[in-house]
Image 1 (cartoon, rainbow, N blue to C red):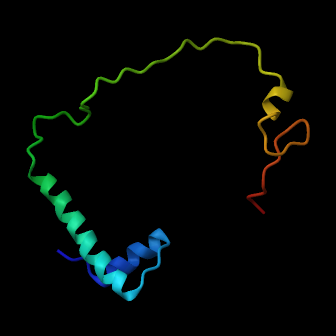
Image 2 (image 1 turned 30 degrees about the vertical axis):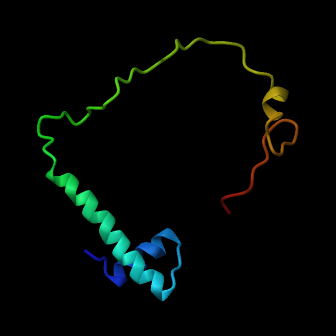
Image 3 (image 1 turned 45 degrees about the vertical axis):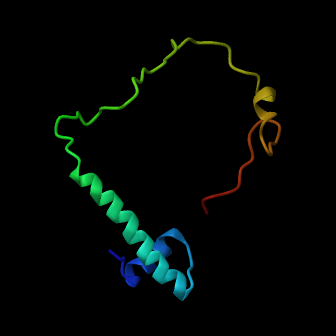
Length: 95
């Protein structure tokens, strides 16, 4: 199955990618091939598998929350790319 050119262009725009004309055709075929492989997963019977099942037995490792002395400000600011001596200086993101 080949993905049509319009859809490849849409995906490329969302991904901020540019392709040549030849690459567009190749990408359509490659994306279609990948989707076909994923469609094969629909054939697997998972009706008896709980939705949260995982192959590894995960256990959350949590520590007790204990109050402690805060780190000295100077120690924390040592890792800052830029500071004014009392706070981090970061680029402005809002007008």
